[in-house]
Length: 288
Image (tube, rainbow, N blue to C red; front, side):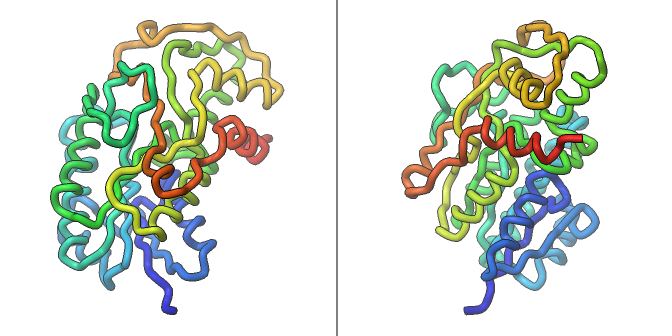
């Protein structure tokens, strides 16, 4: 059987690199890596050129410059216009589109994990524009999968975050010698990029459509995450517990954004392993 082709948009990013690696582990897939030099997702002609010859699957993991995610014009272009143009092209050529989204589409007032079909009410520009991208993909393309992840970490860090992620940022603060302020009243499920990528391969190969949540199992606060990181790394910084309200003014962060894995369960697929197990593996890789 001829191999299928997957085009990964945002292939130089944290999740994009993990997706490239996960698909390359499968002998029946040919991977086309599309970084920012190969495609401009907000330009229709660039999208058309990059998706020739036509791939079977397109995965949009584009994030852009994280420091600009509350810039209204920038976020609308990257998070809404880009997905629209990709969906438009995929609909025209018959490709299946996976659009990566975020837990920030939820307001964060729940105390129970959010299901894929639960009401969304984003409170940040980032969340609003990512949700707009979801709606545009759904409205234009029946063969799609909206994939929500949260607090992604993994090898190489995020290009959008200057090569860092939440874990390496906390390690840097601890090694800096000063106190580390960690939030105690925000709850989420971290996502280890290689684990998420392998689950995405399963979803794509099964032809799952609709919306799926893919995070590692379990939940934690930034305080609990930091404690685990420092203990495993042999670091003993001074930890100062704070609350979300103590942070400087900035984009709204959901107080609670744990994601339920209903789609995975209905498809008979296992959720990624507990976040602490994934974190321990990652810390071994990043040890100096």
